[in-house]
Structure formats: structure tokens, C-alpha cells
Image (cartoon, rainbow, N blue to C red):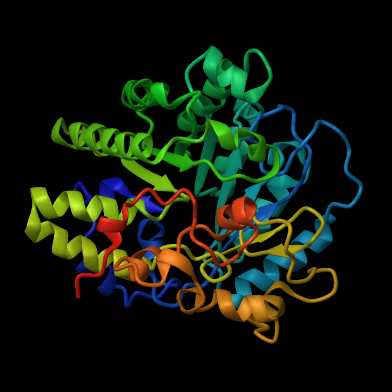
Amino acid sequence: MIGISKLYCGGVEPSDVLRYGAESGKLPSHLLQFSKDKRPVVVWNVTRRCNLKCIHCYSSSQNIHYDDELTTEEGKALISDLAEFGSPVLLFSGGEPLMRADLPELVQFAVDRGMRAVISTNGTLITEEKAEIFSEIGLSYVGVSLDGIGKINDQFRGVPGAFDAAMRGIKNCKAKGIKVGLRFTITRKNAGEIPAVFDLVEWEDIPRVCFYHLVYSGRGSALMEEDLSHEETKKVVDLIMDRTKDLFDRGFGKEVLTVDNHADGPYLYMRLLREDPERAGEVLRLLQMNEGNNSGRGIGCVSWDGEVHADQFWRNISFGNIRKRSFSEIWQDTSNELMAQLKNKKAHVTGRCVDCQWLDVCGGNFRARGESVTGDIWGPDPACYLTDEEIKNSG
């Protein structure tokens, strides 16, 4: 996760992090990615069921009943363990989490135990009544997935009217004072929608937008050929930086992030080095605090059936099930060779990553994407768009 607004537009300084001691339990939510202890933010896929048919769904969800999902009581046991373990954020995801009737009860349980509770949703089921309930509970944030405007989004979602329904959900959240943001997955099919998404963020006064690089997982694997080329990716990242700066220059300080391609960090730094060398030095320090990809360390996933994964995309490898052992026990069990390696992944990457000058700020990029293409967990991420010259270690 690369905070374009934080880094490129000066929204965060290293001193902002150090003031809190850089510990996740003390940091405000917008600084968590810079914590030194990397207590895991946990994505819990509370259900696999979904009312939409998204073509890039990493969980390959359908609108059917799945009989292996964690019960309410099992979910509460998970939440209690995560709170005691010190996980700062629990992200309720799916499928579509609002299809689970006990979601408000589970969110309330997490908030009561001091956790920041976040929902990742397609937004179509957020009625005024549900927004009111989540507002009273104290939900921290709602991230709504939109992959374009109008029909473009509906094509991605597989259901006509999904865009309009999602916009109603966003407005219902805003009306009840819940922070809401957009989540946009970039492919060749919708990259041209990015300017319109920025316009939407401004016109509807949406405080946050995250642009996700495509990960080849679930139904997203079938879109591999629709991923951007390396040069196209650079142009898109430049566009996102340009539009973010334009918002800041005009007094609209929105939070803009790119997600799931940690080459964005070095690329942003190299651009700043040309434009503002003094700021570039501060950004490099923040990137080093961020440490790049943190799958299996600073982020983890619990699936609908209790299986524990390094992140929500990497589902072919499980480290255990919370029905048999607690998440905290599984997460700290370094007798599992891969779990131990993920705690120090920079020592295990291969290929061009080994001598890359940006390894400390990238962390070897996205392991799930590398494995999905080559079968090699530790091989280079094929979506790394930095050239051999750009990664060359001149030292």
C-alpha cells in the first residue's frame, strides 16, 4: 500500500510516525503502515456468498449458500484472540459481508474490544437503516468497490444497476457520518476510467480512493491478459500522482493510495528525486518504515472456513485453521518453514530481486502474483515494472 497523498503530496512526515513511538497499538489509522512492530491487519472473509458476479473476484464468489462458514460464536472467538494479540484493524470482507445477518453484531464485538473495524463491500446493500446501525456502532471506515462509472462498473460487477446501487450506499454512509472510500482494480478494460473516478471523488466529496493493481487470483486469474504492460503501468501511476497533486493544489486534500504493487514506492521516489530532492529524502525514509510487501507479517487473512492465509489473494496455501488453533498461535508458529520465511522474505527472494537497490522498500513485491505465473514463491513478481537500469544497485 503506497500512500500517494501521504508521500508525493507531503501528507505525512517521518516525525509524524516517530511521535507515537511507531508502534501499531499507538498509531492513528492513517499511519499504521509505517509501524515498526507490524502487528497484522487481518482481513476476515466473513462469507463467500455475494450478490454480484465480479469478473475479477479473488474468492470466486457466487450467490449461493456455503455451509462451511464460521459461526457467530467462532467469529467472536477469533475477534477476541485478535484483540488480545494486538491486531490493530479487522477488515470484514467477503464475498459480500453485508449478506451475513450477524455482521453488525460482529462489528460491535470488535469495536467493544478496542479494534478498528472496517468493511470492504460492493456497497449495493448499504441501506439508510444499515448505515444508521453501523454509525451507532462506531464503524471506522467503509471501502466500496467501483471499477468505473455507470455501465463500465456494471460490466465488471456482472449485474446491471450495480453502480447506481453502490452510489446510494456511499451516500447513505456519508449521510450518517461514516468515512467512506472507493476501491478500484486497474485493468486495460477500465484504466481509461481513472480520470472520471477522480472527478467522482471530487464532486461527491469522497475522502479516500485506493487504486489496486490486478492480482491473478480466483476469477482474476482469467484477466491476466488484461493486465497493463509495464509501460502502461508507469503511465497510470504517473496519472494518479498528477491527479492527486492537482487535487491538493486546489485545496482538495483527498487520501489517494495504490495497492498491491510495491514497485510504486521506488517509482514515486525516483520521480520526486527529479522534482523535489529534499522531499525525496523524507519519502525514502517513510518507504523504509513501510517495508513494502508484508504478506504473512503485517497483513493476514482468515477465510470464511477458518483457514489462515498470508493475505487474501494467496489462498492455495494455508497455515492452519482457527477451529483447531488460534490465529495468534498460527501466526507466530515459525516451525512452519514458509511462515518463518515470510517474516524475513528479503532473505529468500531470487532472480533480479536479490541485487535490487529497492529491496528494503519493496520487500520483493507480491509473492502470490509471482507464484501464480511461474510457480515459484520466491521468484520476481512479473508485474514489477522497474527496468534493470532502475533497480541496479550503484553502491
